[in-house]
Length: 513
Image (cartoon, rainbow, N blue to C red):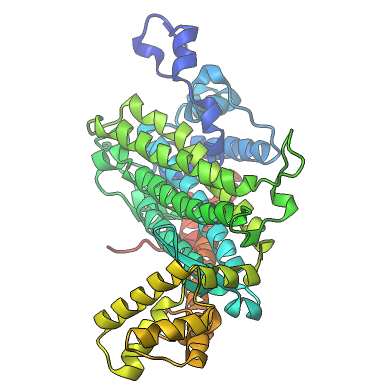
């Protein structure tokens, strides 16, 4: 008979090759905190309900608390021959207390509901960290100095110069995108923050569990009520990966602009030396490597989403080992996304924009031509479709002369020939990029007052998210502290029901949905 914890039915052990192929201990290191917290909550519930003898439960709690202290010191190592974090912790308890006592810990539980609960607990932390990192980058983007309200950049459509904008307008646009990423992460958190513990393998159990108690001890907002769904669901992982992939794409779009605009042909922005590297052969080079890697690593987060969708689509309800392949890819996406958010925040603080160069490009690229069309509508009473045609004719004629909108004398002559004379002084005013930027006073437009209004709105939204983040972290911290306080008191001999009834006041209530 094999000596594995599951080995009663088997005559021989798995080979070393099978163990290497199936073990997850290297991946499960991130779940140690969650597994120990979950074990403690489970044993507290077992003891209170009388499912296992109180003395055994107390002894197990004491062993788990010792393991937690060892983990806190960085001394708890998982043994690969024990396959995963769940068997490792259980075996450590059994080695401490003996099978007669420690063997009670896994009563009314399966690795199926364990792994789902552990992963949800870890993902909650990650999702909150991602919200915090996004909010930090949003704060950098919204903390622009007043002069950037009129620091001119060409705006682009179809990768062609379109209309002039300001640096502040560009920064608030990216902040607006990132705050949608925060909303997506909060939505994923909401679907993650449900306890699977007590679903067991897939069908529940005949033991009288209190799933609401363990959910509260673990800080969950609710219980996944259907046991088969609780152990089968991986949509919360896929939704999280989707939020990472979309967030990675948004960071990549910002990075693409920085890479493009920092090139000599644009010369609109300079990346700090601290976020660039040189060439091994060309001494003149300054390469925006952080922005380039931000752009490239968006592929990792997108790839993880595709991997998880592919993994889950062919698996029937009920646990299959296909599902253990979710974490290696997701862990990589987590590390990529969080590190990218943090380094992009640092890079963004140090960006230096060249407003004079931006204004020059706006003149040369006819970026304010729309302002003539708008002027002819407002001042001459012409329909916009006709003024669009007139302005297009002006641009075409200037190009043939090798001139730009800066050549207001030529512009006035051409418009007179077209039968729509406009004074040169008026053309000089309406074609000036700064005039265009300041005149777009519609909500969400480029004018300083419009941008300031959007900044105030985005700051208020960010503050709301920051408040939610603080409350949620406090809730999880409170639940963990209450769980461990109860475990220490009961391990020392206190009554299960009395202690748990007392700490219940500190535990978050479950949401009714």
